Length: 131
Image 1 (cartoon, rainbow, N blue to C red):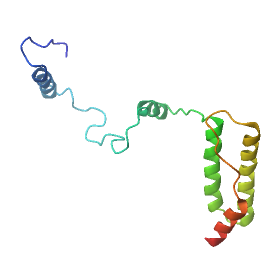
Image 2: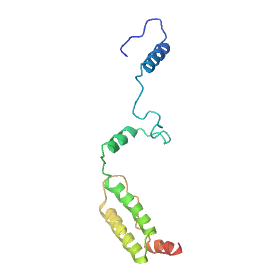
Image 3: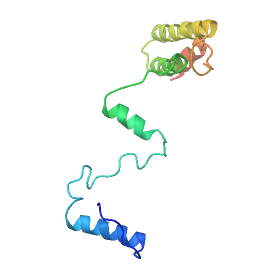
Image 4: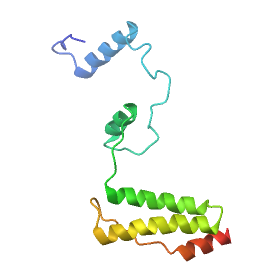
């Protein structure tokens, strides 16, 4: 598409003609993803979508800041405790994450504020018994 728009022709008409002629020449045939839904079209807009897509396609990952990693680990610990087979297993999981949370509160972690306090292990065990 190296042609210049002729003078006097509306820009939209010229673009439409260029697209139509390219379609007729088959330049849009066999494009990757032809006939498939646009990936992520059903997700909310994320201005960093292209960075995330590039990281995923290259098999790369970026480590989370320590405070965010601890939050993520705490969520995973709660999920693991909910699936535990015994009360002892729950206590082990929750005491381990609570120790890490206490250490982070005591020393501080780089990154966003931690906003975590140690979990009430007895409450978690009680909820587990109730299920």
